[in-house]
Length: 147
Image 1: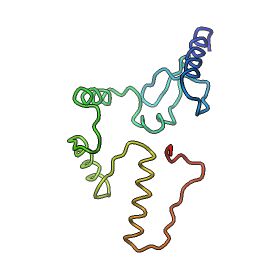
Image 2: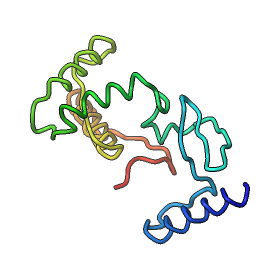
Image 3: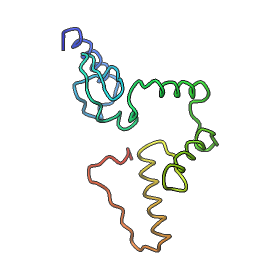
Image 4: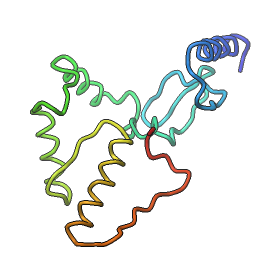
């Protein structure tokens, strides 16, 4: 890391530590941008993005088709609650059902909601099959949401 880049990294790190609650340990890297499956730090080093933004950038960074689709949707509507109907949501549900196995989908906003829904569906299945004392297994130390 050259002196100018090191200074910039230290400034970013200092600002982060000043304003962001320290509930995670962080690596001494500051990513500046991404292209496809690669990330680049403030010193220009290239990394293969194995985390995919903790699964939210699994289609890569700076992909033109995705940027265009996001821009088009943002020009119309950012987000509404699942308490209302959405044509885009209905269309996505149809694509998922036609191209996979279930008869219905459940959209949620977080890993916590996804795991809670999985537990509820497992319990509902157990009740429907009259399974007594069902067990739900979980991996110790795995991330299952923030609750």
